[in-house]
Amino acid sequence: MGIGRGRPQKEIDKEQFEKLCEIQCNQDEICAFFDVTDKTLTRWCKQTYKMGFAETFRIKRKSGFISLRHAQYQALKEGNPTMLVWLGKQWLGQSEKPSADVAEPEISDEIEALLAELDEE
Image (tube, rainbow, N blue to C red; front, side, top):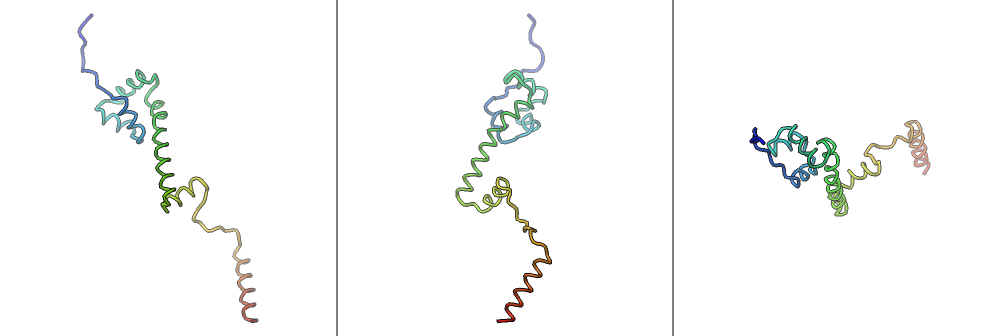
């Protein structure tokens, strides 16, 4: 057997890689963190997880979503008004836009009827 040639193999820490995926770092950021190319990262993912980077990232980032959802829910339970509004919009379909259920002419007619009643009193 011959002597290995080329650069020494870069070390990619599996636990650190998964943490970077959890906090939604993209491929360029992860490559920069480990000082590797995208080809090296993809090769490492195939060796480590038996799938390429994109599929590995799609799976590993989900635990970050769970952590974020948990933090949002904690803020909600603590009464954070911004989180209450935001989650109301996201989860319950609420909005800040006024409902346009009543047409303008109907409102005008109702106002005039109320004013007429006040004049009679």
